[in-house]
Length: 297
Image 1 (cartoon, rainbow, N blue to C red):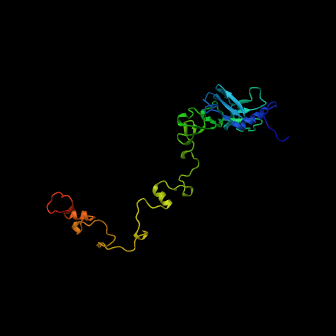
Image 2: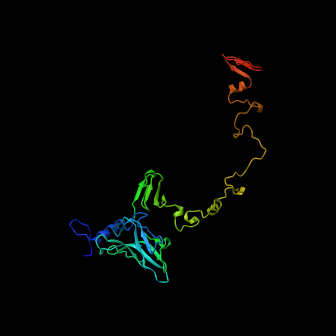
Image 3: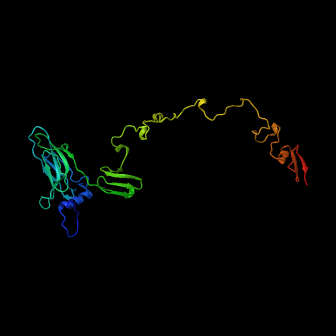
């Protein structure tokens, strides 16, 4: 039979089947940023592995204390690179399905989730004839478990999240991720790899680092510029002379002609008469020299 499925109640499920199932769901890696970190302190041919938790091809590994591992001497004439790793092996004794090991002179890994599976923790350089291992000889190689994408406000974001935790911040309206320094935007200009120094026009940029260059590249006019009269569109074809007048019958003449220009300074007969000092009304106007009152019943 070429196909199979699992698990099911009352049917045997092997360790390898369970391991493959869980590995496909959560993957393999270390859980916390400081977990299972490999260090060296020049105290001999040893490295120390911090306490921590990991999942290796679907199987859990827990260390509750710092573990010391001794490396083999290097009598050769060239440096050697060793691998500190977790090995998932179903043939191992009970309780040791996942073990902490050192592979001397090789960094190769077995990654078959159905049998032996190796999770790297560090590469350690062992210099020729070395009697101690320093911190500079250790290179961290830990992968980390994937995390779900969360949603939160700034005030409610996880205060101590797992490395690489991603969530959408509804307060800021951005996706953010957790790193060693705390929370920060998931993508910023500084975090984009292999980006050009200047975004070209063809990619939606300006191809310039200043406003003048941007206007040039985009074919825009300079901030301060002039146009020759020949370039002005919609201009009239004829113009009045610099000194000219308008006849009062010209429809273009508007407004009220003042008395000083021979008019009445008013827009109706009553106001025009009063502007000239002539009042036609039932009551006497206030007294003023030169006024004429024609009493109207």
